[in-house]
Amino acid sequence: MEQTRVSGSKLSLVDALIVSTICFGLFIVASTQAMLAGYPDAEFSDASNVYGILIEVILAVCALLYLHFRHFDIRSLYPRPQWMGALEGVGIYAVAVVLGGLVTETFEGNDSSIPVVAFSFQGVSLASTVAFAMVNGIFEEVFLLGVLLRGLKGQGMWFAVGFSMLVRLLYHTYQGPVGVLSVLAFGLVLTVFYLRTGRLWPVVFAHILGDIVPVFFGEG
Image 1 (cartoon, rainbow, N blue to C red):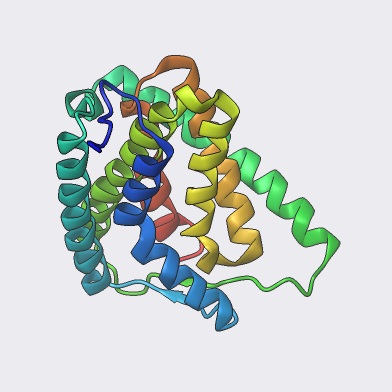
Image 2: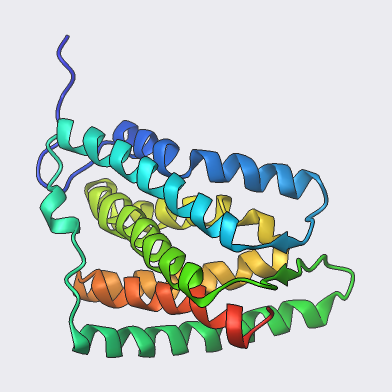
């Protein structure tokens, strides 16, 4: 029997699982291994940034080829950079940081024995950080929101949101319980904005800031 093809911006659950596996399966496995190892500290370098860029570009190409074969509207996934959208992204990032801080501070205050993952960015250059942030921000939000969330709306809005957020959570478990809460808060803010506007560039820009700012002004 011929397999039913998706059209436009719709995805079947099988398609969503395949795209999730292509894009995030490797990272979910790595995060699970880190969780089982007791949440070791996360160390970043120029080499790890370059490796991350190469891996995400390869995975993105594979996923886009699959979506093209399934007749998904790939052209709609292109984030259209605009200055106003960048300003909105700054606002989204600020709201996400505040919400994440409130959530994690409350959680940490209840139990000091909860493992906290330390992040090390010693010696990481600005060039590799910005390059990785741009690729990673586009990669994650395009596939989490532009593909999975939008594509699964036909299965029900809450299901689409839950699926996208679950995938986001699974490949960030290496950050520990507190880090995961921060990621979920961040992802929720981006998701709400995307649901209300349908625009990718502001959330992509917010994510880019989320990858750059902590390196030079945060934990690193």
